[in-house]
Image 1 (cartoon, rainbow, N blue to C red):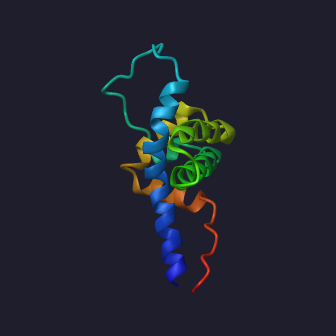
Image 2: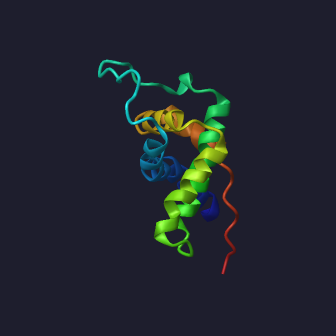
Image 3: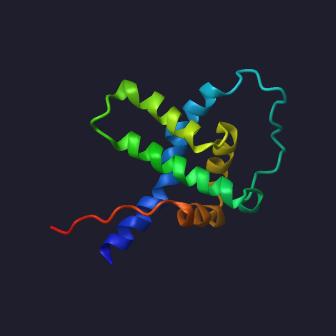
Length: 127
């Protein structure tokens, strides 16, 4: 039961950790002068505005980014390019990744969808 709780906690942290790790990366990939500035009165995206495919891609990218971020064998200066490559490999546009991450920060239903879509963490061997 302990590993189930650990797995759940890991999944719960994936979205928030990945959002903070990848947001600067996604900003590097986008045009510095957006065609249409975001309106402060624009409604926030909710869980229903993202497809299951979007959520699965987000969860996969977030999992990979989190692994890279936590990998002590990767030098700090090599983590940013590797995380960017993981985001690109997911097939999810950086803008959509950011939208999902920002929406998940305040939407428990979206957080649950992301947790459900996150790849299962490998079982930790018991000592």
